[in-house]
Amino acid sequence: MPELPEVETIVRALRKPLVGRTITAVSNDWPRQLATHTLEALNWQLKGQRVEAVKRRAKYLVFELSGGDTLIIHLKMSGHLAVVEAGEPRHKHVHTVFSLDNGRELRFRNMRKFGRVYLVKDPETVLGKLGPEPLADSFSPAVLRERLNGRSRAMKPLLLDQHFLAGVGNIYADESLFYSKIHPQRTADSLTENEVEALYTAIQKVLKMGIAREGASIDLYTKPDGTYGDMQNAVAVFRRTGLPCYVCQTPIARIVMNGRSTHFCPHCQR
Image 1 (tube, rainbow, N blue to C red):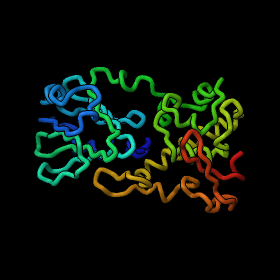
Image 2: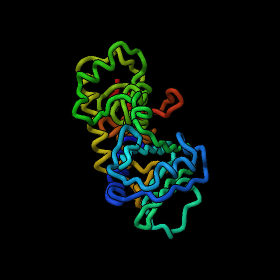
Image 3: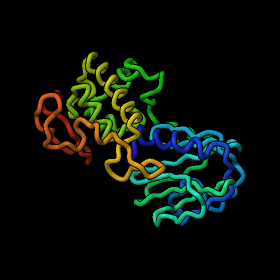
């Protein structure tokens, strides 16, 4: 699933071709992808609205529209967004298309069909329960400490909980725990103040690295233009099972936690 760096990369790529453009029509051949409206209602509501801004919240793409509505798209496991000429052949897994006033289209390709499209007046109805943004100025070691207080969950599944912290997924949780030297099975209430500081620093480090490298093309993720990100070439532990740790040469281990593959160094992470 695209995580914060991948979604941020997509948002940055879509701003130029979308901001200032007007939506003229919407088509869809998989109704379950439309979370809040029927296709007829979505067309009626969106037609004539101009895209004023393209933003990100956690793993969601947020499109602010001129009529006061907000279009929100969650890519889920396999979603891909691209702006292309209307005459270009459509991929068989493109299920929702937003036609634009310049003869181009925003196409939502979604092979596994888990992605969702929302249209709301108040974005908080979709986004309101999400945790803090880990790269926001308001997020600090003190905020992280406060959110950890009183929790006894293991750190890996806790970092994946979008109500705890927004945007971190499997790749960046594993990488954050490696750089902070915290074992993924450690519980939140066992962390020292120094470890909380280290975890904060590591989360910031790996997310910024992921954005700088335009995401990790490990599974189905590609940028809107179809090219690959580069973060997969910079991971320290994720999917490096059995390979030597870059720090101590101990083979990277893999366990499953809450159904998710988890990668770590048994020597460096305690």
